[in-house]
Each structure stands twice: as structure tokens, then as C-alpha cells.
Amino acid sequence: MAVKVNKEECIGCGACVSSCPFGALVMQEDKADITEACTACGACVEVCPVSAIAREAEEKTISIDKNEYKDVWVFIELAEGQIKNVAHELLGEGRKLADAMGQKLAGVLIGEGVEHLTKDVFASGADKVYMVEGSEFKYYTTDGFTTVFAELIKTYKPSVILMGATNDGRDLGPRVACRVGTGLTADCTNLGIDEQTGLVAWTRPAFGGNIMATILCPEHRPQMGTVRPKVFKRPEQDFSRTGEFVRVKSTVKDIRTRLVDIVRVCTTACNLEEAEIIVSGGRGMGKPENFALIEELAGVLGGAVGASRAAVDAGWKPHMHQVGQTGKTVGPKRMLPSLRQLTTVLLAMSWKYCRH
Ligand code: SF4
Ligand code: SF4
Image (cartoon, rainbow, N blue to C red; front, side, top):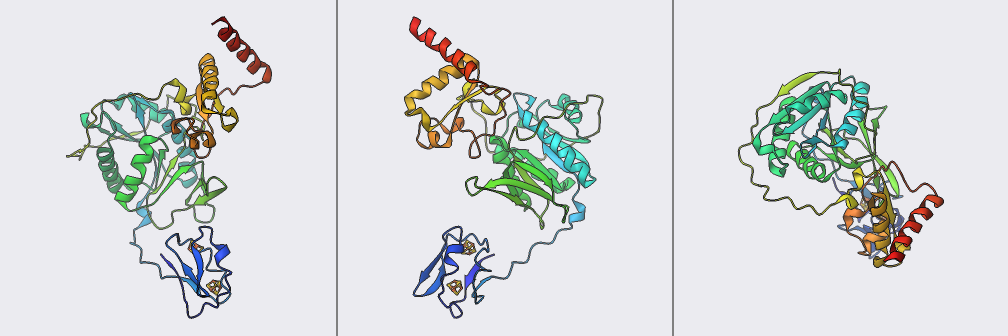
């Protein structure tokens, strides 16, 4: 959908220019003009006193029978054969959504030799597990997982899909959404049910984290989103729970990407999402060399090293260390709780340096 200015009706008052959050409106020869920066947000439409700005007619949307789409799905992401924490966190939150919608919660498990993990998925709250096994899924591949996930959606028609906002989830989610013709809200920090529509209300930071936007997906199915790790608590597992197990045959014929090697660049120091202790620094460190202090302290405490956006933007630390709204969402069990404790650690470090 586009927004247009009717130049015949524009009286050149300029009121619309300041209403545009994207700086997409300019005055040219006493008439408002919309530039390519326009996102069609519509904020200027109501501002014009002579209704010279209007949205162009909406394209006809492909009509789908939304009643055919049921259940909440969670992508069960794996790392070295184990279910990642974020998948458990999403099962816990997915359980609440499914209960509120009166629907079932399902886990989607794709991998090689993963059947034994189904009990773990049920224990975290799932009613159902869809499993696709095969040696071609030993490691995550963009095209392999996209194809199989899209096929599962077309066959079983889920209403809601949750994925972790991890490297794999951020890669897979948008591709699957595009393949099945729906939208996706990325990097959510909260989920709920919109009271008026009964749709999932996806909340995420917008405009550089200055506001929180809540997004609905009224026209398309499934409703999809990625959710940051550590936003929700991992549920208590109940291993007496069981559920329906659906084994699905792989339809993937041609995977174009092949894993050649794994090069680990991330050590304990940058495993922020799983870290229980984090020592973080920002511009206050003064210069990049001073981050050695942060690294040393993190080493002593067995924690990870965090950095603010300013420090990362300045090139003092790589992006993989960035924490906060524009970086990784973290949930350490232990911050440095008191000045006394910090002083003790720093004294221990200075003692170590003095001896050298
Ligand atoms: Fe700016 Fe939104 Fe109007 Fe486009 S529709 S010109 S982005 S206010
Ligand atoms: Fe023209 Fe309306 Fe913008 Fe005024 S608010 S400059 S009349 S488009």
C-alpha cells in the first residue's frame, strides 16, 4: 500500500512535514512531496487539513480460511544434539498462548537421531510433537530446514509459530514466512493475546528501542514471530506428561548448502545468552585497551564479557558481545551484587598483577 499527495488539493501549509517519523515528506514549490523513504505508515494522512494525503486502495489480499489454522507450534532448536534453552522457554510461553486460545501446543523437531528428545518436549508442556528425521538434518541448513518447515505448515496448518531469535531462528523464520506467504514479527520481547481480536499480540522494541510496538497479524496465517532468548522463564518440566507423536517423512530432495567445517569463534567469554555471570563495559572504559580489565575480571569470575552499543559502534568489541535492546538479551543469575564484592575481586586481580 502506498501513500500519495494530491498536488491539486495541497495548499502548501507544511503541517505534514513534521508529522512524518521517517523524514519522508519534503516541500517542493509549495507542495508536499513524498520521497522514497516513505514506509506507508500513514501518520501524515490524518494531519493534512484539506485531506490532500491519502492511502492508495489496498491490494486485494489472498483470502484464506483462517478457521483451518489451529494450534501453536514451537521450533525445537538443537545445539550439539541437545534442545536449546530458548526452545524450552518458548514451550512454556506457547503453553500459555495455546491454553488462552483453547488450542494445542506442538513442538517441531527436525534432526538426525532426535526421537529420544520428544519426552523432553512433552515434559516442557507440548501436547504434540512433529518429528522429521534424516541424516540430511544432522546440522542446520537454511534450504533444508526451510523446505521441510514450509511443507509441515502447508500440511498441518498451525495458527501460531514461535522460534527463538537466535542465529538459526532469525535465518529460518523469515524464509519460512515468505515461503508460506505470511508475515513475521522479529525479536519479540513479550507475547500476549489481543482482547478484541483474539490474535497473538507480538511486542518488540521499535525506533531504536525508544518505543515498544505491539503487532498483530490479522490477514495471514500462520502468525509467526521470533522471540529473544532469556525473555521468558524456562518452565518446570514434568516427565510424567506425554502426548501425540507424529513422524513425518522428509520431502527434501536437494539441499544446496553443505556444512564443511565448524569454526568456533565464540568461547565462554561471548556466550552471553547462556551466561550466569556477565561483566559488561561501555564508553566509560575510555579506550578499547581498557576492555582487558573487563575480560580479566570475567575470566576470574568465570563469566562472559558484555559491551554496550556505544562500545561496539566504536569498534572496541565485536558485535557478538553486545547486550541490551539492540544486542543480545541476557539473563544472568548473578550480576556483581555489591561494591564490596567487586572490590574484593579487583584486589585479587591487582595482587595477581603485582606478583608478576
Ligand atoms: Fe511519512 Fe508515513 Fe506519511 Fe510516508 S506515510 S510520508 S512515512 S508519515
Ligand atoms: Fe499539503 Fe496537506 Fe501537507 Fe499541508 S498537510 S503541505 S496541505 S499535503
